[in-house]
Image (cartoon, rainbow, N blue to C red; front, side, top):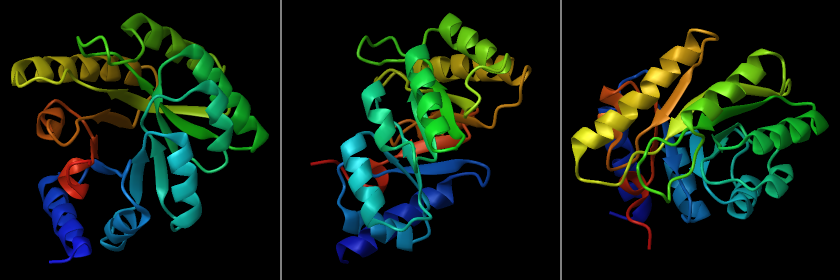
Amino acid sequence: MNNAEILRENYHKIIEQLPVDVQLVAVSKTNPIQAIQAVYDAGQRVFGENKVQELVGKYAALPKDIQWHLIGHLQRNKVKYIAEFIDTIQSVDSEKLLEEINTQAIKYNRVIKVLLQVKIAEEETKSGLELHEAKELFQRYLQGDFCNVEITGLMGMATFTQQKEQVAKEFSYLKQLFDQLSAKKKLSTLSMGMSDDYQIAIACGANSVRIGSAIFGERK
C-alpha cells in the first residue's frame, strides 16, 4: 500500500469506531500537505493544528472548505494571523487571550467560535483555566462581553498515564463543568480525548475528539 492508502485505511478505522454524534478533529500538526490532502480526499473536513505559522501555510495550500481548529497554546500576538479564517480556537486559556480574539474578530466582522481550555490534569506542563476562572469568564460572556466570540464548549487534556481510572476521573470532572455551564446557556462541544484515550473520553461524555497519530502515524 502507498502512503495515501495507509492514511485512508487508518482514517476509516477511526471513523468506524466513533459514534455518529462524535466529531473527529484530525490532528494534522507536523504532517505534510500531501498527507492532509489524502485524509481530506477520504472525507475528513475538520483538522487541528497547534502552531500558527504552520496553520497559515496549510490554510493557503489546502481546500478552503476545511474547518481549521487551533488546538495548541496560542500567543495573543499571533491571533491576528488566523482571525480571518479560523473556524474554532480550542485552546482559550486566559481572559486576555479571549479579549484579543474578540478584538481581531471585530476587525474581520466575524464571530469566532472558541472552547475554554480547562486544566483537568495533575501534570504541571498542561495549561488551562482553573475551574473558577472558567466560570468567571463564562459569566462575563453571558453578560454580553466578547460580542464577536461564541463560546461553544470546553476542551481538556487528561494526565498522560496508564491509570485509566485517573483519566476517566479527569474527563468526568470536565463533563460536570460542561453540564453546569450548559444549564446557563446550551453548549455544543465537549472536546476531550486523543489517540491514546479517546474511547475513555467518549464514555465520559466527549462529543469531539482530537486524533492525530492513530490516523497519520507516530510523529517523527
